[in-house]
Length: 203
Image 1 (cartoon, rainbow, N blue to C red):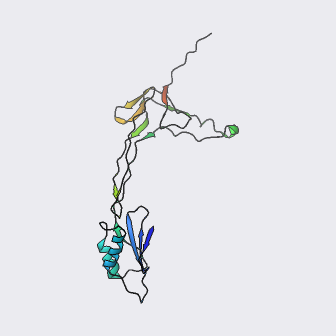
Image 2: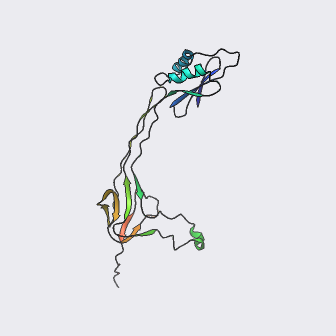
Image 3: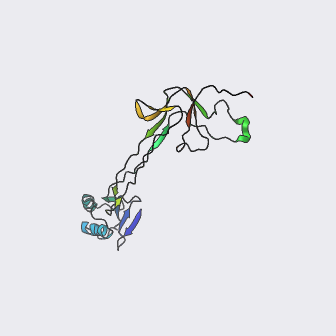
């Protein structure tokens, strides 16, 4: 936490890293003179802390003579960050990477990148953006929650929007869901290809 000491070094002000709370610690020796509430409030004000002061807590420090223990004497409003829209893949997660040089150690039975799905299976869920709430620091400054960006539902061959839940994409036919191995699953989620027979022309 950030610190600011009073001139006599017996009263220490600390501000939390998120700037939401301020703490006072009094370290007065037995023969020392105990500060009053005005002294503490003036210390807070001189550090830009005024509208968020918890006067009851300041009074409690004085009345109970709380020493060598940090006490929260000012509190702002915590910021709730915004969250961008995102895509959840509902089929089995992509396999782990492997070293092609060590082919004997690969479980080929379970490592296929092609995931079989049935018609009507949900394969993707789109989560909308969630707008957060701005916060206020102990010094009264606004802590912005940031913007939230929505994304569009991806599309693919032989896939369709779920008629019962428009946030989901379903397989329109039996087949295999193919994922690009390049790692761009969010930008390029892949396409659903039906298991239709391939007819090769004979030369």
